[in-house]
Length: 86
Image 1 (cartoon, one colour):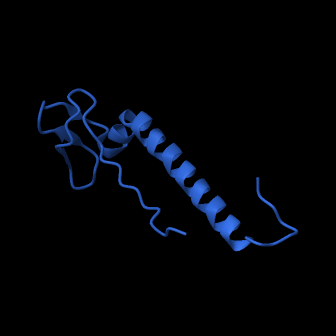
Image 2 (spheres, helix red, strand yellow):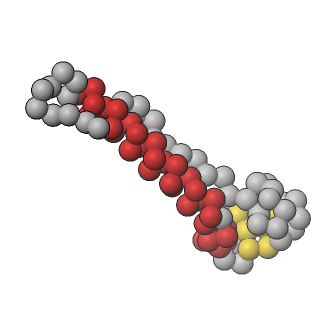
């Protein structure tokens, strides 16, 4: 079973799609270095504005984990006459 279930999601500016963002030291304020858009809500605002992208990655992550678990269980019980997988 793969043990690499880490995903990195790079936040991007919703206006210009740039990933060149600057956040303040406490993540309370942000700015896009490409178009200059300001994010007064900082990191939390960027997360909210990138929620569709984050949800897509979460769905893909869940699908990948499910497939890996099914594969591991099938291999673990291969040849067992009492436990069958469809």
